[in-house]
Image (cartoon, rainbow, N blue to C red):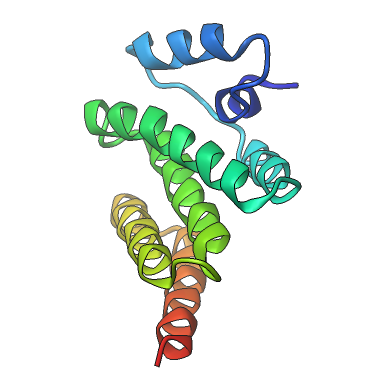
Length: 141
């Protein structure tokens, strides 16, 4: 299992070591994007309270890293995906909170798109999140 998944999985025996490394490393870190769906897959197999707790924990760990390294696209991307997954876990039980998390994801994706204006993938991911937000807003009416 790779370190990005260990960061999400608080039950992993190497979670603490991974968190320490990712929290203290000063240089740019490369987080393979394929690890994000793996972390999401872990959360989808859990019941809502466990999935929500996992996303809350991941968010709490990633947010300070993004604040300290605002131009670090891999961490911002991981935080955006965490917000999207958290939103999906909350949609049926707490639509207002789900909307808030999805708006946060869109904000992070906008930041990535502004840092990489030529990236078609960044623009597509932002558009997909915005469509997801519009659907969520439409379902709340």
